[in-house]
Image (cartoon, rainbow, N blue to C red; front, top):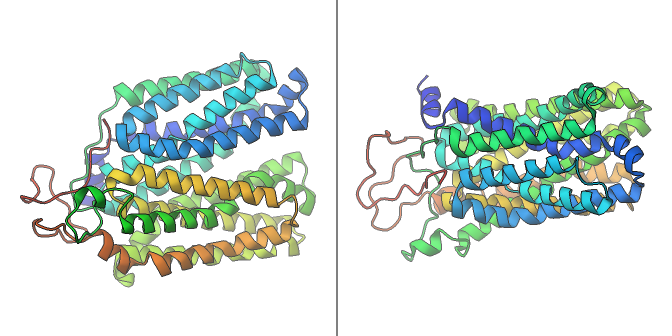
Length: 448
C-alpha cells in the first residue's frame, strides 16, 4: 500500500495515461504506412524499390536522431523535448495526406522517424528522475507493454476504419490525435515530482571532480555505456528480425494465408506484451531469495535468455501452433530481458546522463538490427534465427562479466567526498524532508 501511494504521489495517474497514449500514437504512426501500402501502391503506382527507399531513409533518420535526442532530453527536459517532437511527428503524419511523390514521402517519413527518436530517451528520463528506484522496473514494464498492445490493435482499427473514411482521413485523424496529446503533455498535465532518494546519482569518484563524474568522460560511465550498448546490439537483434520477417516465416514455413498470418502475428505480440509486464514484476518477487533487487534482476534476465533458445527449433517443426508458441515465448522473453536492461540504466546511470545513455544504446541497437537485416540477404534464415536465439545468453554474460551487481554498487553508489552519510539502498526521503547538508541526491527534476 505504501509503495503504491509513493508511486502515485510522484507520478500523477493522468500523466501516466497520457504517456502511454503517446506511445500508442508513436507505434501507430510507424505502422500506418505499412497498413495503407496496398492503397498507396494503387494510388501512386509505387514499386517495391520505391517502398524500400522510403523504409530505408525512415530507419536511418530514426537511428541517427537517437544520438541527438538523448542530449536534448538531458539538456532541456522531457516535457519540452517530447512535447515538441510529438507535435512535429504528428504534423508529419497529417502531411501523408498531402504529399503525392516518392520524394515527398521519403521526406515526410524520414522527418517523422527523426522526431520519434526523442520518444524513448524522454520516457526513460521521466522514469529515472521521478519514480522511486524500487518502482521503476514495474513502470518500465507497463510502458514497454504498450507498443505491443498497439501493434495488435492498430491493424484491427485501421482495417475497420479504412473502408469508411479513406486513407487520407485516417492519417489526418491519427496526426490530429497526436497534436492533442502534445498539447496536453506540454501544458495541461500536473508535473511529476522528482524522486527524493539516493538513486543512481553519480559514479563513485576518487578525485573529487563532480563535473567529470557526472559526464561521459568518467571511466565508469564509459564502461557502463559500452556494456549497455553491446547488450542492446545483442538483444535487439531478435526484435528487428521478427519485426520484418515474422510474416514471411509464418507464410513460407507453415503455409499460413494472409488472415492466418495476421492472427498468428497478433498472438506473438500479445506474448511480447505479457513479457513486458512480467519483466517489471518478476524482479520484485525475488529479492528475498536473491539477496538484492539487482541480483534478482540478473536472475530474471538469465531465465529470459534461456527461454529464447528454443527458437532454434522453429524450422525443425512443421506445426503452425508449435511455431507460433516458440515465437511468442521468444518475444515474451525478449521483452522481459529488454525491460530489465532499461531498468538497469534508469536505476544506475547518473540521472543527468540517462537520456544520452539511452540514446547511444538505442542507436547501437538500431545499427545492429540494420546489419542483421542486411545479412538475411546472404545467410539462410535458420542460421540467422539460431544466432539470435543464442545472443541473449551472450548479452547476459557481458552484463555478468563487466557490469555485475557488485561493480555497480562500487561504481555508482559510493557517497561523494565530503557528503553526509549515505542513505541505505531502498530507503527514500520524505518529500517534506531535506537531504543532509553537503549531500547530493543526484536526481534532477524530470521536466523543465
